[in-house]
Length: 330
Image 1 (cartoon, rainbow, N blue to C red):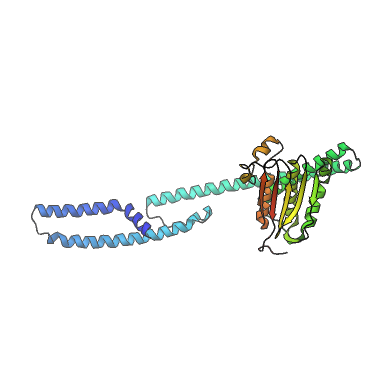
Image 2: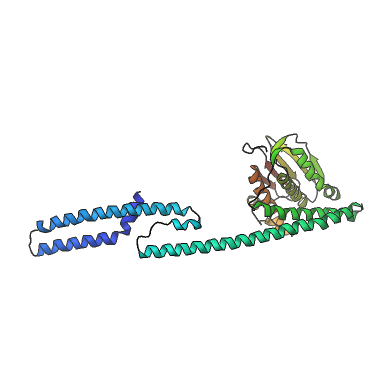
């Protein structure tokens, strides 16, 4: 309130100064002509009283307008019609400018929304259409068991994963949601993810150390599966030799540890940012910087959390904390 009073007085400083100047002029004139000052003090006091009353009333109206405008600041642009009644020509002009800007903003948002929806529809259709030739190629590869076919199957798994990344990226920012929260076996989700990369484990001779988890979690199966698969994919990508260890830390933290090249200390705080690839990602031309960003977004949506620790040259540990109390089983 004090700041408002000071701001108001500062705004009306010229009028107050002008009134004070007029009063001082009258007093000076009466003093020079040696006229009785009582003759001017009475009307001067009366004018001061009237001026203070008018000033108080004007401050009250200004405070009401200020309160109304502060409330409007939190409203959408479409509600600009609720602006207070203009106090003058300039206020009316400013309000007309505000309404024009609001209309322009609304029009621009509608155009952007239409473009975004069109892009969403196009890439969603593209992602679903490309799954057909992928499935056909996988069926053809199942009839062969050669080093080449195994390598092609592994590459095809990567392609499928990238398609799922596109769909996940589109779904995360859409208004609709297909989350189905229920109690699930964490082991079932992990085994499903491991089976997808079984061929890559074998072809690259990487050891899988899997300690059965033996717990249930409240989550969404499809979205958590994407997170686990993405973390496993990264572990395989950056582990040229050694092993990948999947285990549980109390109370409900899923850990995926690899013996890969690790992450530089300066890159570690930013690996969950969108588009950030770091030193290892720049050396690996296939890195997009999207996978871990999507994992963090999904974990936030599900009420989980994800973090990483790493030692360059020794490996990386990704921890997914699945303990939460807010989600309800459907």
